[in-house]
Image 1: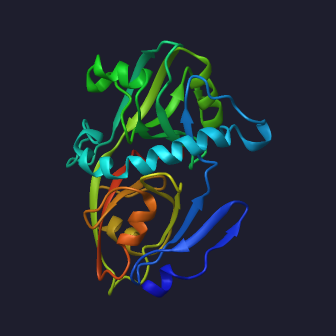
Image 2: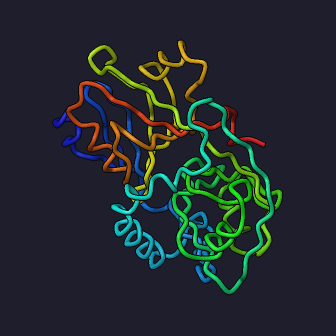
Amino acid sequence: LAHLLSTAVSKSQGVARAPMGNGCAPCCNADEGKNVKTILADAPLIEESEKGAYTPEHMDIMAEKVQEDAKKFQETSASHTAGLKKSDGTPTHITFTLQRSDQDNIGLNLDALDGATAFVDDVIPGAVENWNKAHPPTERLQVHDRITSVNNTSHETDHMLAELKSSTTWKIALMRPTEVTVTVDCKTHPSLGLDLKYSPNGNTLLIYELGDGAIKDWNKHSPVQINRFDRIVGINGVRGAARSLLQTAADCESLDLTILHYEAGDITKP
């Protein structure tokens, strides 16, 4: 696999593509920065032509923050996954209203890789963290939550991000995942059959397409179906930066994939 990972990375329209796995090789796409957004109370939107991405200065701040938190992520993974159902395969739908002060940073790192929802990659000091401390898990915005609607705005991530920034009262609908472990023997499965996307500063791999391969075969024999837009959050016990996950998969005869599983459905359409 080392030769696979060392293959030259080609770029097309701001997307980097690279393989992963030891014989289990999906296509992995890295959206270089545009799809990871730090939501701060004072972060202005740049031109609409760039689809609502935040300024490079804020992106740099976020990148530094993620690098600093790489070690912390491993140490605090238990708190990050608080409230997840880990065994029954049933994702949770949650709706609640969150009120924040317009004087505080919002304090969310979100990624917009699927284009239709906002995935909570991290909660950093700010209004959301303060809210979470004062409310039960069913009224919190947590890491790995997938925001599907904000104040009845849905199916367009950039529109939801604008609503999060402009409003101090959020009526939120979200999906909270369950964790599923899938073990793949790379000797018997030459391909995972996945098209993955990841943000260079993120901590997960988005399953953007699911074709023939190990995961589709696994679905045939499991009551829990891995779907498009589920996310790989751990590989062989390692969690952390997305690029670290890819490196962990190198030269492995088997892969233990920890997957954040959400309810199936086409989230890209109303």
